[in-house]
Amino acid sequence: MHRFHNILFVSHGVNEETEALQLAIKLAHENQAQFHILISCPPFPDTLSEYKTIYEQSLIDKINKFIQLAKSNLGFSKKDVPIHVEVDSGDTPGVRIIRHVLKNSHDLLIKEAETSESMKGFKALDMELLRKCPCALFLHRPLKNSLQDIRVAVAIDPKDEEPAAHDLSLRLLQVSHSLNVLYQGNLHIVSCWEFALENYLRDKVWLRVSNAEIDKMVMEEKQSHETLLRKLIKQSQIPREYQIEHLKGQPEDVIPTTIDHKNIDILVMGTVARTGIAGFIIGNTAENILQKIDCSLLALKPPGFVSPVNAY
Image (cartoon, rainbow, N blue to C red; front, top):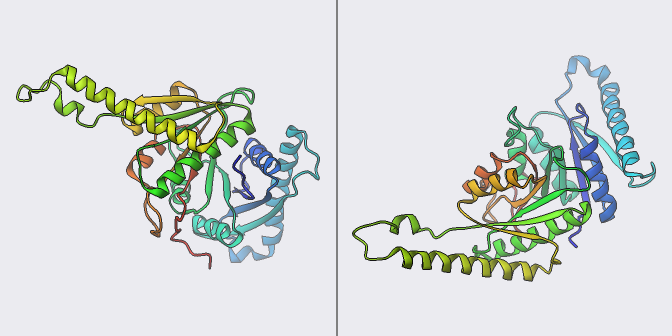
């Protein structure tokens, strides 16, 4: 089982976040991890500096109420899962959060997703964290299903032969399995395939290739892709407690559709295709998927990812 060791929960100190806190506290408890909360808020004006301490304490008191409610809902005592809370006020919250992650060696960041009225996609701060934060990032949305029927999906591309991509795929499978065990839910492994030349070859009068031959090539591509997928799953050594969704089509179309049809609560996926390049942007496919989903997201970077943000 994959374990996290040093979890950071980020709050703005404004909204009610009990469900997200329950997830974070449960993860910290199951992983025996350190757990910290960072309240990220706008800079306090100098003209009101005499009230700054009272203001920050009010934010801490508010989050402590949510913490106690979350622990109570989980059946934990006040002493279970010690939590350190601090306030960080200032401009450029994304940079400040990432610096906090780097300085304190956090391996998982959890926060409520900031979404548009359509409830799909992610706003600027979350996208900045997805692009630049070096650790795993869990952007939480309210669960669609009951706690007894949590549905977790993981997006896997078995054809990427880069060593870092292969290692990331194994980690995605292991992390999604661990999350599924935590929730005692249902794990869906989603992988998309297609024969890229199919639409170019079919019904072309100038091409002496029959539809039967094209069908054979399409089937061979499907079987080759599925063989690689099952080999990857076997290498991950996760138990056979999953359902494979081996689907034909483009990932940016198929994955959001699957999330809707299967009523998925949490999607686990990688967001950056290459390593070692500071500030490398999210791949187009991942970006398109992110802007179409309405569920929680657990996003992982490949090993060796270098954040463009420095700790100091």
